[in-house]
Length: 127
Image (cartoon, rainbow, N blue to C red; front, top):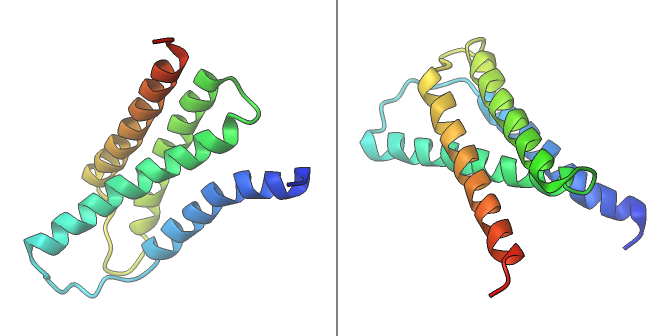
């Protein structure tokens, strides 16, 4: 894989996921109550998409930064994007931005960061 292809393969995914999140957040709500299961599924989706976003940012940033620095910056980018996404939703018809969703997004990002940190410790420790 040449250098340009590798750079695109590493840096494109976090930006693509951010664009997808933005696009989904731009869709107006139809205000139909679909019940508890649907509500819970949406919250699990929040958690998962921000865990993935952190992992993608860490994967990209660790090509340029030390592992811990890359992880800290990935966490800051992901949480910042979660907050900005909720602010963005306030301008979309029928949508609301909530601190609860930022907390769920942050929990997903923190969970991914913890898994990455743990896996790095496990692989760095000889058995």
